[in-house]
Length: 248
Image (cartoon, rainbow, N blue to C red):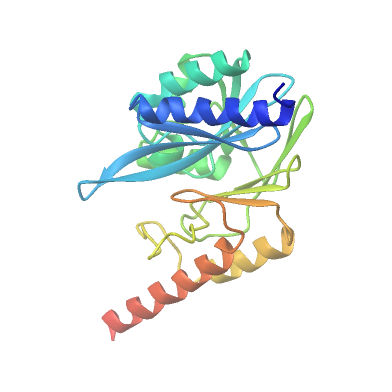
């Protein structure tokens, strides 16, 4: 007879593999405990580029962190995870105002899902005509969804003026969003709203707040490495040096 842990792993593997093979435009992977990473793609310069989001299965329902980048995949993702876990999606939290984080929030709202962001993010969504959340919070905020505790932290500007991170105590998961770059990244990426000068100090505050995360989840590309913060700082320094050379 197959042991239960192995059966669970195989079930989760096939759950993820099914979406990838069917060409649904997204993948879902088990991270740890009740937490899962979902990935959708958009074409940049004609090449598909991935964006990560996360969801957590709680006793109250499922909580999504960040919007799918490809909004055509919102309904399939919600339907798939609700069917698989036999629970409803009850809330979604955005980590900053860009479309790869908030693009589906109108769809979430129409499906009766409560949406949240910082008030700074809500103001920027209004300014840039991005989908808005129904609820906003000032300052670092804690959320309790049944048995799961989530907390938000604003370490300072970096990728965007409003980028927050979310800490999931269950599993010691640091969801960094686009503030943190994957070790797979070769450059710092979109600088349209970035603050390169502030970014290093922001990362320092982040490290001081969460010195020993079990997992670090960046907004794009691979998400397995705990070296992502150091790699982000390396890319920030590289981008800063390049900018200075072009201005010289």
